[in-house]
Picture 1 (cartoon, rainbow, N blue to C red):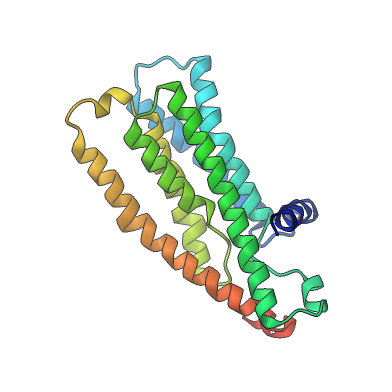
Picture 2: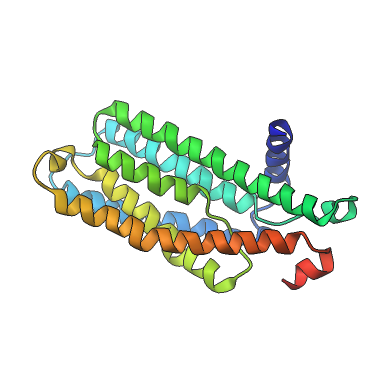
Length: 226
């Protein structure tokens, strides 16, 4: 089963053009637009710090896995290819296939986030609280997917993804010494934002994902009308 999921993941990634993907080039262009926010955050949190090659390395450890996940989600849309409607599959088999593919991608992306957090931990420049935030935020980010519901998909693209990346970078760029003092208010507010703002929006996307999976179990004609 895992081998089939890996081969399908590679095949879909190779065969899906960014121009033909549901989100397309517009979603790809959104990522570099967020990068200036990272620069602003770094300037606010570390106004007098010199930007060294070690900072470039740490930023790369943080940004590159997230960029890979961003592109991967675009090149692996939550859609059933026409080939699977031509195969003798039942409604339950089509739904199970798409659900397993979605869970595989999300789990794979989450593992990348975990490896990233472990690498950041060994740099000694990120606090435990910040790493926990980045891990939880990154796991939710890993399971984002485009959905048929245009309103939810708009919120995902325009607000939730930039909010997740920017809030995670704030934790990443915050000096470790800031958590050594009695700066619990910032920590509480950060996790409140995570659980009270990001989590409800993330759960609404999961609901839309489940709805799309159920639609995919229908015939090709019915699926196109969902």
